[in-house]
Image (tube, rainbow, N blue to C red; front, side):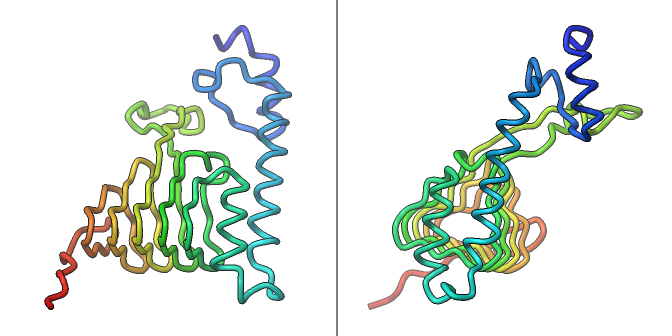
Length: 193
Protein backbone atom coordinates (compact mmCIF):
# COMPACT_ATOMS: atom_id res chain seq x y z
CA UNK A 1 0.00 0.00 0.00
CA UNK A 2 2.81 2.43 0.84
CA UNK A 3 4.29 1.99 -2.66
CA UNK A 4 1.00 2.76 -4.41
CA UNK A 5 0.46 6.13 -2.70
CA UNK A 6 4.04 7.10 -2.01
CA UNK A 7 4.05 10.29 -4.11
CA UNK A 8 0.97 11.78 -2.40
CA UNK A 9 2.11 10.46 0.95
CA UNK A 10 5.58 12.02 0.59
CA UNK A 11 4.04 15.33 -0.55
CA UNK A 12 1.75 15.47 2.49
CA UNK A 13 4.64 14.58 4.79
CA UNK A 14 6.69 17.45 3.33
CA UNK A 15 3.81 19.79 4.16
CA UNK A 16 4.13 18.61 7.76
CA UNK A 17 1.03 16.38 7.74
CA UNK A 18 1.51 12.98 9.29
CA UNK A 19 -1.19 10.61 8.09
CA UNK A 20 -1.23 6.85 8.43
CA UNK A 21 -2.01 5.31 5.04
CA UNK A 22 -3.32 2.17 6.75
CA UNK A 23 -5.90 4.24 8.59
CA UNK A 24 -7.00 6.60 5.84
CA UNK A 25 -6.54 4.32 2.83
CA UNK A 26 -5.56 6.48 -0.11
CA UNK A 27 -4.63 9.83 1.35
CA UNK A 28 -5.33 12.46 -1.26
CA UNK A 29 -4.53 16.14 -1.26
CA UNK A 30 -8.25 16.98 -1.66
CA UNK A 31 -9.24 14.85 1.33
CA UNK A 32 -6.66 16.62 3.44
CA UNK A 33 -7.74 20.05 2.14
CA UNK A 34 -11.40 19.32 2.92
CA UNK A 35 -10.59 18.12 6.46
CA UNK A 36 -8.30 21.11 7.02
CA UNK A 37 -10.92 23.65 5.94
CA UNK A 38 -13.52 21.99 8.19
CA UNK A 39 -11.10 22.08 11.12
CA UNK A 40 -10.34 25.76 10.46
CA UNK A 41 -14.04 26.64 10.42
CA UNK A 42 -14.63 24.71 13.66
CA UNK A 43 -11.56 26.27 15.29
CA UNK A 44 -12.75 29.75 14.32
CA UNK A 45 -16.22 29.11 15.75
CA UNK A 46 -14.82 27.65 18.97
CA UNK A 47 -12.10 30.27 19.51
CA UNK A 48 -13.77 33.53 18.55
CA UNK A 49 -17.49 32.95 18.84
CA UNK A 50 -17.68 31.04 22.11
CA UNK A 51 -15.55 33.44 24.15
CA UNK A 52 -16.92 36.84 23.18
CA UNK A 53 -16.78 39.26 26.12
CA UNK A 54 -19.77 41.16 24.74
CA UNK A 55 -21.89 38.02 24.85
CA UNK A 56 -20.46 36.56 28.08
CA UNK A 57 -23.76 36.65 29.96
CA UNK A 58 -25.43 34.31 27.45
CA UNK A 59 -22.43 32.34 26.18
CA UNK A 60 -22.53 29.38 28.56
CA UNK A 61 -26.17 28.35 28.12
CA UNK A 62 -27.05 29.75 24.71
CA UNK A 63 -24.20 30.44 22.30
CA UNK A 64 -21.68 27.70 23.18
CA UNK A 65 -24.22 24.84 23.00
CA UNK A 66 -25.43 26.17 19.62
CA UNK A 67 -21.87 26.33 18.30
CA UNK A 68 -21.12 22.81 19.54
CA UNK A 69 -24.24 21.65 17.66
CA UNK A 70 -23.06 23.54 14.56
CA UNK A 71 -19.72 21.70 14.55
CA UNK A 72 -21.51 18.34 14.83
CA UNK A 73 -21.97 17.50 18.54
CA UNK A 74 -25.34 16.19 19.71
CA UNK A 75 -26.25 18.65 22.49
CA UNK A 76 -29.48 18.52 24.51
CA UNK A 77 -31.45 21.34 26.12
CA UNK A 78 -30.33 23.35 29.15
CA UNK A 79 -26.66 22.44 28.71
CA UNK A 80 -24.04 24.67 30.35
CA UNK A 81 -20.63 24.88 28.63
CA UNK A 82 -18.01 26.94 30.46
CA UNK A 83 -15.29 29.16 29.02
CA UNK A 84 -12.47 27.62 26.97
CA UNK A 85 -13.99 24.12 26.82
CA UNK A 86 -12.76 22.11 23.86
CA UNK A 87 -14.63 19.33 22.11
CA UNK A 88 -12.75 17.03 19.75
CA UNK A 89 -13.78 19.20 16.80
CA UNK A 90 -12.55 16.81 14.10
CA UNK A 91 -14.65 14.00 15.60
CA UNK A 92 -17.51 16.06 17.02
CA UNK A 93 -20.22 13.75 15.68
CA UNK A 94 -19.06 11.21 18.28
CA UNK A 95 -19.96 13.52 21.20
CA UNK A 96 -23.43 13.18 22.73
CA UNK A 97 -24.46 15.51 25.54
CA UNK A 98 -27.89 15.00 27.09
CA UNK A 99 -30.16 17.61 28.72
CA UNK A 100 -28.96 19.58 31.73
CA UNK A 101 -25.29 18.63 31.53
CA UNK A 102 -22.73 21.08 32.98
CA UNK A 103 -19.23 21.20 31.51
CA UNK A 104 -17.06 23.54 33.59
CA UNK A 105 -14.35 25.84 32.23
CA UNK A 106 -11.36 24.54 30.29
CA UNK A 107 -12.55 20.94 30.09
CA UNK A 108 -11.61 18.79 27.11
CA UNK A 109 -13.64 16.03 25.47
CA UNK A 110 -11.61 13.70 23.24
CA UNK A 111 -13.00 11.09 20.84
CA UNK A 112 -9.75 9.86 19.29
CA UNK A 113 -6.39 8.58 20.41
CA UNK A 114 -3.56 6.58 18.88
CA UNK A 115 -3.91 2.81 19.00
CA UNK A 116 -1.09 2.00 21.40
CA UNK A 117 -1.67 -1.77 21.05
CA UNK A 118 0.13 -1.49 17.70
CA UNK A 119 3.13 0.47 19.06
CA UNK A 120 6.47 -1.27 19.32
CA UNK A 121 10.06 -0.20 19.94
CA UNK A 122 11.87 1.46 17.03
CA UNK A 123 8.62 2.37 15.26
CA UNK A 124 7.21 5.80 14.37
CA UNK A 125 4.45 6.79 16.81
CA UNK A 126 3.05 9.18 14.18
CA UNK A 127 2.19 6.30 11.87
CA UNK A 128 -0.08 4.60 14.38
CA UNK A 129 -3.76 4.54 13.41
CA UNK A 130 -6.34 6.37 15.48
CA UNK A 131 -9.05 4.71 17.49
CA UNK A 132 -12.25 6.78 17.43
CA UNK A 133 -14.91 6.20 20.07
CA UNK A 134 -18.07 7.94 21.21
CA UNK A 135 -18.25 10.05 24.38
CA UNK A 136 -21.66 10.16 26.07
CA UNK A 137 -22.49 12.61 28.86
CA UNK A 138 -25.82 11.59 30.36
CA UNK A 139 -28.57 13.82 31.71
CA UNK A 140 -27.60 16.23 34.48
CA UNK A 141 -23.98 15.15 34.92
CA UNK A 142 -21.17 17.61 35.72
CA UNK A 143 -17.67 17.66 34.26
CA UNK A 144 -15.49 19.68 36.66
CA UNK A 145 -13.09 22.45 35.71
CA UNK A 146 -10.10 21.43 33.57
CA UNK A 147 -11.14 17.78 33.39
CA UNK A 148 -10.35 15.59 30.39
CA UNK A 149 -12.83 13.00 29.14
CA UNK A 150 -11.15 10.31 27.02
CA UNK A 151 -12.64 8.37 24.08
CA UNK A 152 -15.19 5.63 24.72
CA UNK A 153 -16.36 7.04 28.07
CA UNK A 154 -19.92 7.38 29.33
CA UNK A 155 -20.50 9.66 32.31
CA UNK A 156 -23.72 8.53 33.99
CA UNK A 157 -26.85 10.47 34.81
CA UNK A 158 -26.32 12.93 37.67
CA UNK A 159 -22.68 11.90 38.07
CA UNK A 160 -20.10 14.46 39.16
CA UNK A 161 -16.54 14.45 37.86
CA UNK A 162 -14.29 16.51 40.13
CA UNK A 163 -12.06 19.33 38.88
CA UNK A 164 -8.80 18.38 37.12
CA UNK A 165 -9.88 14.74 36.69
CA UNK A 166 -8.88 12.42 33.84
CA UNK A 167 -11.86 10.23 32.92
CA UNK A 168 -10.62 7.04 31.26
CA UNK A 169 -13.49 4.69 32.20
CA UNK A 170 -17.26 4.92 32.52
CA UNK A 171 -18.62 6.72 35.57
CA UNK A 172 -21.85 5.18 36.92
CA UNK A 173 -25.08 7.15 37.47
CA UNK A 174 -25.31 9.26 40.64
CA UNK A 175 -21.70 8.92 41.76
CA UNK A 176 -18.82 11.31 42.40
CA UNK A 177 -15.48 10.54 40.74
CA UNK A 178 -12.18 12.38 41.17
CA UNK A 179 -8.52 11.97 40.28
CA UNK A 180 -6.15 11.06 37.48
CA UNK A 181 -7.44 8.57 36.49
CA UNK A 182 -10.87 9.35 37.90
CA UNK A 183 -12.18 6.85 40.44
CA UNK A 184 -15.59 6.75 42.10
CA UNK A 185 -15.23 7.96 45.70
CA UNK A 186 -18.85 8.38 46.72
CA UNK A 187 -22.40 7.55 45.74
CA UNK A 188 -24.81 10.51 45.65
CA UNK A 189 -27.39 9.83 48.40
CA UNK A 190 -31.16 9.90 47.97
CA UNK A 191 -32.93 12.85 49.66
CA UNK A 192 -34.88 11.70 52.67
CA UNK A 193 -38.38 13.12 53.02
